[in-house]
Length: 85
Image 1 (tube, rainbow, N blue to C red):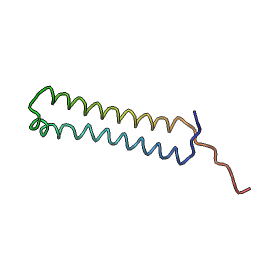
Image 2: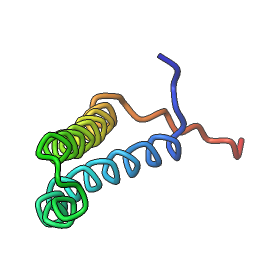
Image 3: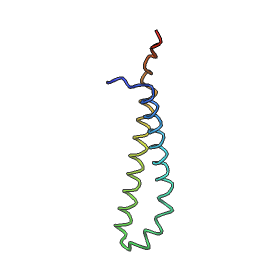
Image 4: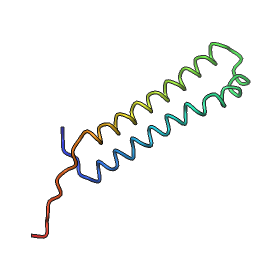
């Protein structure tokens, strides 16, 4: 695996946290949106499919965020070299 700079590692960590938060947001928001979906789409199958897709998107976001956070803590930070010499 290619070594990443310190700032690139930080960006990946922040991106992982953002993915995790968005995934949790999808899980929290989906039940409150479902009554509006039920009004717009009378089909029970379509409502169930929408709910399934939303929870699947949330799960993918959470897994991606956790993966990036775990990768951040597993890899060692790059060595700081002194360039003033």
